Length: 331
Length: 264
Ligand SMILES: Cc1cc2nc3c(=O)[nH]c(=O)nc-3n(C[C@H](O)[C@H](O)[C@H](O)COP(=O)(O)OP(=O)(O)OC[C@H]3O[C@@H](n4cnc5c(N)ncnc54)[C@H](O)[C@@H]3O)c2cc1C
Ligand SMILES: Nc1ncnc2c1ncn2[C@@H]1O[C@H](COP(=O)(O)O)[C@@H](O)[C@H]1O
Image 1: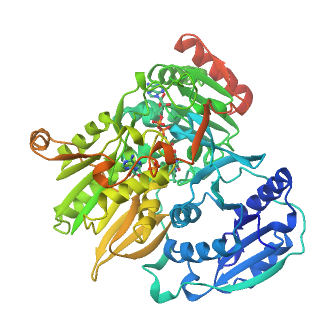
Image 2: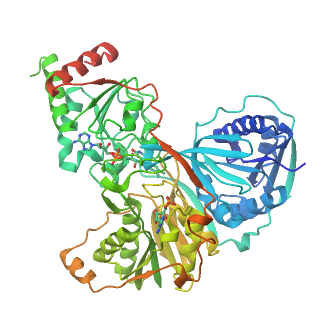
Image 3: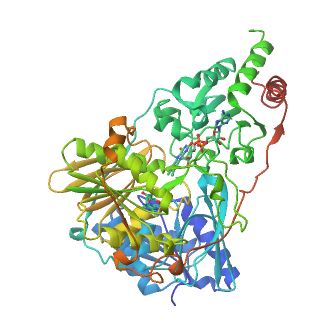
């Protein structure tokens, strides 16, 4: 039986990444909506020596797991993965191909889109199937709005799915595994994996801080950070930042909070001039109490904050610093 | 060796965003526009290769309406050598794949060894164009670059941003396409001299006909990824909003910090 939904599994040295279970959870829900048989949910895993992981996935959500092996697939490269995936998708002809919106999933998905000539919906937070039509929800303008799109009659429906968008599949299955030899040889590759390495470590460790005052692009410059620093000092806390702040060199990289920075969970987090893009929110939403100060009443940061002020941070921060110093008897 | 940067003009993030009447996109009337942030970093990367004598010509290309020419001028003033502006009313409503086909048609005979794009555009957030174009041109691609270095033997070494402060190092055989992540460098600004020099530089404007394409094949009519509607993001639990003069608001915040966190 061909696949209705094909899920691209992700693993790291054989350890299955959480996104895989989330995609399978989503696949089961969508198959239910579309009236498809769960026997038509398949997964695809690529690598070298991945028969074991394939078996694990067959036990936890996929009716069949196709595993592609070959030296060209030992490590992820867009070139190698794209060719292997395109070949398998052509023979399986699924209605839908689900990929995680991860660094590698996002890297390969556009290649598959152009290779198969089907449109791609990236970073979906929700997908619904109704009457043979897909409705996909994703963010635009860095989270200021959500967009609902459809992909017309293109097949497979191709989407990358945001982490955490779907509940992981929690049931058991007794799926099969099947090996395919990768259609791509090592010598054909125009992309060569060299290594995965750690980025530079910084001097500050925000993960242990109990109070963090963070500044974003709304600060407007490195020298303006004194208002953030003053408040952090009054509270005995640390200074954090959104990505543009560290990109522009206003603060060193180790102050960056979010998906490509550090994940923090202080007792108190104060976000100043930060709009609240998802990549920032995933790094701070575990904080105990969140205060947001932003001049834009519609800023998404207010969606995760406990208390918010619509106003100019350059007025609110000094006032707050003063109030705290007074309360501590330091004024 | 010739290099190309794909650039897009997008609304500035501090513009006043409002939905249009049909709620299918934002109302552009009150927006101000600028060069997509990621593309500024991509341009800088190619300009540095030119400064180092490794790239001979830096070309920028955009597909967009009349106003997008301003973004090309910014690039020329910053140091790009020439610009291509693909402009055609039929392109309104294009989806990423059909835009990639248009870009492919515009660049396929130029012989670019290195094509850079931004990781994503700050408006549609698709994050697709570099990869789409690479595959259409049958070239290798690496996304989210935080460093690029040309090697011996027509190879470029790319460090791709992964999660948890890790990087994947990958070597691509040229010609190749790379998408650039923000923070890869410190982009320069246009100098007065650059702005003057830009006036003499060429912006070539081309339409679908010039590219041997017709509307229907590409453009709005061929789009399959279609926007149904835009809406404000779901509010989550939503914050308690405080109002009033700064001093009063500060006292209110302080009271809550004391009650809820005990850090003061
Ligand atoms: C792969 C990837 C990884 C990423 N990783 C991260 C990450 O780890 N961390 C991260 O933060 N981002 C990350 N980003 C970037 C993210 O998408 C956003 O672009 C970024 O978080 C926006 O930062 P910001 O809120 O400071 O800036 P903006 O979105 O520009 O917001 C600035 C805010 O300041 C407000 N403001 C301006 N002036 C004032 C004032 N005087 N008073 C009060 N408010 C004011 C504005 O209303 C606005 O809301 C990543 C993006 C990608 C694609
Ligand atoms: N209309 C366009 N014209 C030229 N380049 C574009 C266009 N749209 C996207 N790009 C390029 O592709 C990158 C990613 O855009 P996107 O896939 O729309 O998120 C941008 O940073 C640009 O480098």
